[in-house]
Length: 334
Ligand SMILES: Nc1ncnc2[nH]cnc12
Ligand SMILES: [Zn+2]
Image 1 (cartoon, rainbow, N blue to C red):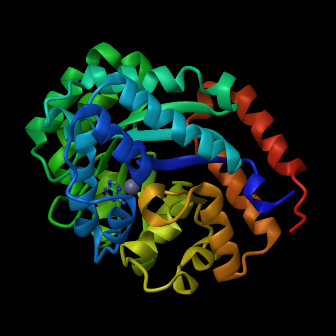
Image 2 (cartoon, protein in one colour):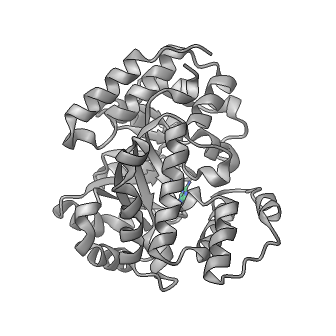
């Protein structure tokens, strides 16, 4: 079987980051939104990012086209179809409520629209799903708390909370209270840390927020004590190799620390982050790291196993076992 069909879980995926230019223009026309680009080609040409912030500016701007439940359903359904075609069997999907409520789109519209796609995903695409609500770390702690409060009617559809957006200058400590409150509501906890921020951002996510998984975690390699802690506690890292190149967290994929991270005993997973912007979905990321870093088949299998082990499928161990058996049975032929 081709590598793309290696069964895998995607654990670091922003649904808003799956908005392909074609769909953006379709939704813009439907909703009467003017985009500052002539066509999809011109929009794609703008995808040359210098860092995280230059990406976020474009990313939040393009979200203007997402307005109705149907828009969110269509967005999520298109992602699930693409992910399924690249071997994704389970997806834990981030969304950014504040990026929509700030534009007057209620959180209920977002969750109900996404849920309309997610609730049909097993049947339509053979992909099980979970939904994770992220707080924007460049907004205030009060806004995060209000967002958690506004999500209360929808918590049966949300498995956990995350933290994303501009990292440097917005440490995890700012969100200690809201994570405590989320934990008290039974929500799982993850956070972006160590993408652009130094290792202290990862320490804070672990020690102050009590996260179970670290999104990115790339810069942990600068701190041996931190690596030791992550290995000891088997804290999964959701790495996004193509994203790291596009946002210049690493210069070239050939220099990505993934092999060294695996050698160090870290529980690494490979994910796509914002695939419409960074040049590839989950299977494309696996393919790219295999080519650039010469990762051998048994290590690719380990990455796929890790994705299910790191997932929040502990509420369905039978399903997790089935997925792991699929990974073990996979025969590489390319
Ligand atoms: N890579 C990333 N880092 C932080 N926030 C994000 N939001 C969407 N993608 C992100
Ligand atoms: Zn991310």
